[in-house]
Length: 103
Image 1 (cartoon, one colour):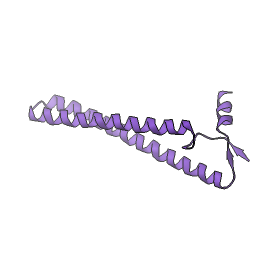
Image 2 (cartoon, one colour; image 1 turned 30 degrees about the horizontal axis):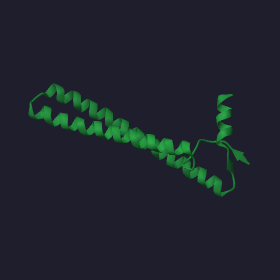
Image 3 (cartoon, helix red, strand yellow; image 1 turned 90 degrees about the vertical axis):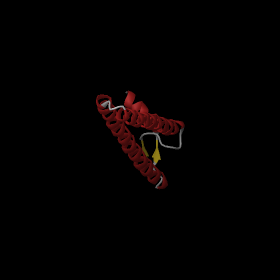
Image 4 (cartoon, one colour; image 1 turned 120 degrees about the vertical axis):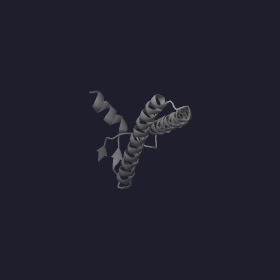
């Protein structure tokens, strides 16, 4: 039996996804850290308007980080399913899935 599905860790596509997620998370964390610095600076300067804007930006970044975390959890769950299928002798044809989607 051959089942088509999405790529996993065992190929270049899966590794590219991991690197992309790690990079995105690093960028978002860096932006969040800067927001916190700006919030502290605005608080010290009693610039409450800027502080409110930065808090809003920080909340947005937190939502983005949470979404990345959810995506990674779903990816790990999918990889677990794929490994289980492979242990049971079910072959997974990634190329076939791509061809079916493009048809």
